[in-house]
Image (cartoon, rainbow, N blue to C red; front, side):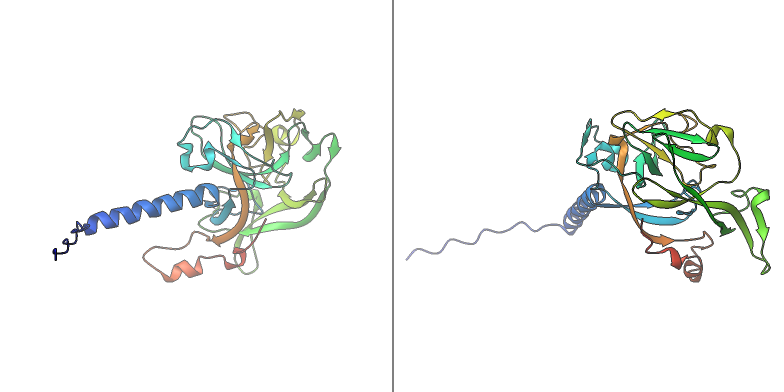
Length: 272
C-alpha cells in the first residue's frame, strides 16, 4: 500500500504583514463609508449662527444628491460631472467644496435652485420676485467662550448679564420659504453690499447658497474671492443630518474633567 502524500506546508504569515493587511482593509472600509454614506464635519466659523455654533460637530449624509469627485476626501480622483438623482431642496443645509485654488469644505443653506431669481432688498430676501416672510423673534444670546470670544462679537453687541456672564446678543428673525420650510437668521446691522443686491439668476446646474448669519457670511451673494458665487451641483457633497457633539472650546487635553464641562450637551442630537 502506497504511503499517503505528506500535507503541503503552509508558509507562516508574519505578524507585521497581518497587521498591515488589517489596517489597509480598515482604511478602505472607512474611506467607502465616509465617501458614500456618512461623514463628520466640524463648524469653524460663525457664518451659520444661530443654527450652528463654532465647535459643533455633525454628521453629513452623502447619498442624498448623488456623487461626484468631491464625495471622496480631497476630491483626489478627478472624475468629471456628477452621478446624481436629486437636486437639493430650498432650505437644505449642505456641505460643499468651495471654488478657487484654496478650495475647502464649507456649509451653507440652499436658497435658490436652477432658474430661480434671488435678491436682497433692505435686508429682506426676495425669491422669484416675492418677499420671503421675515418675522422678528426673540434675540439670539450666545455666551462668550474660547470658541466664540470678544473677537467674534463686536462691542456694540456685547453685554454682561446680572449673573456676571458675558454674552453676545443679535437680532433674530424667522424666515419661511415657499412650501413652509422655516429657519432662523441673524441680522446684525445694515450693510448695503449684503442687504441690498442686484438680482441673481441661478444658472442651470448650480445652486445659490447663503449663511444664516446674514451679515457675516461669504456666500453666493459675493463673487470669489470675497464670496462663493453660484455653486455647481457637482461640488455639493451632502446634507447636514444631526449634531453629534459640541464644545465651547474650554477643554484642556491634560485635564480630562474639562472634556465634560466644555461639552454643550443640549446641542447633541439636534437635527436639520
